Amino acid sequence: MAVLGFVVVLGLLAACSALPADPILRKLDPGLRYQYVEADDGELSLQDMWMSVSDLKEAARYDPDRQNIYHLFTRDNPTVSQPLLHGSDGLLGITNYNSRRRTIILVHGWRSGMTSDFITSLVPAFLRAEDVNLIVLDWNAGAGSINYATAVTNTITCGESLARFISWLNAATGASPFQYHLVGHSLGAHLIGVAGRNLGGQLAYLTGLEAALPGFITNDDRFRPDDARYTEVIHTNAGVLGYLTELGHVDFYPNGGVNMPGCSSQECDHARSYFYLAESLTTGGFTGTRCASYAGALTGNCLLWGRLQMGGLVPKTGSSGIYYLETNASPPFSKA
Image (cartoon, rainbow, N blue to C red; front, side, top):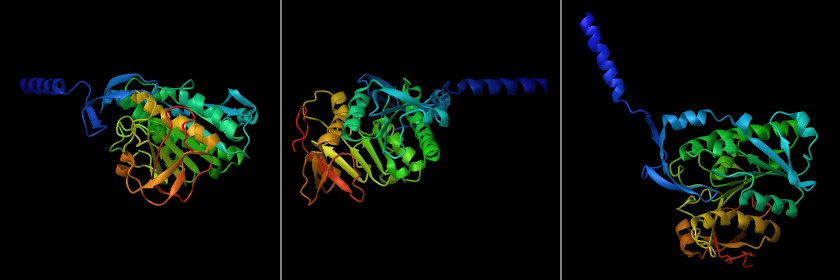
């Protein structure tokens, strides 16, 4: 019996040694395992698109309810933010937050943060266009991982946390879901979709800017049309860094949605979405022509009846479809 037990132990040791050191849990995308992914700061890196145990362990260390930072900007403090802490009614009461105003929440993408062009272009544009509560969600604790697979996982947990933050804010102030406009770039676009979904699709307006393609081709947690009462997506590097097909009630494909005039890099194309939105807030001048399909939008072959303004302050609730428009190569981008 002792010999038999020794053999069994040896067999178990051999089996364990044959197991991979970092088992794969799932494939993020159906394509190649290793793909180049560009961070929001423009850095290109080769990423493993297969989720491993170590990726999941890293994601588990991210606690969005505790680590997320919310920065409030208003016309009374347009350049220096005031902190908002989830659950701190006392701190909220000494800020410039006003429950009678609309609330805009901006959410950055992978390896981005408060100093990104996404933030520095949209904060002043919104405040110039309307007297709003402008909240920037800094989730760099989850988005800053060098492992893209971890950041994709954190996108979902952060979206759920953002929904809890909005629920607390509404309970503390009496604000309504109908007062919200959430804007997310790249991974941030899918994140605001998750937040809206967890709030029952009752938020007024979601704008997805260049919703990330890698990690979301077959991901059920991607941005959806019914994540809010009105959802809009702007595609400027479709099929490369940004999602290719339609995602919202309304999808705009400026210049065919892939290569933007005046750009010589994918990073520039990816960023154009928020520069177009920023300009639309004050000029409103981007008018799209309706397309029969996203394939028609990619080629500019759009002859259907119907035109619609891209971006802007006011949700086009009840509108739907795919739209094409052309822009200038430099500001002002609108040709209207």
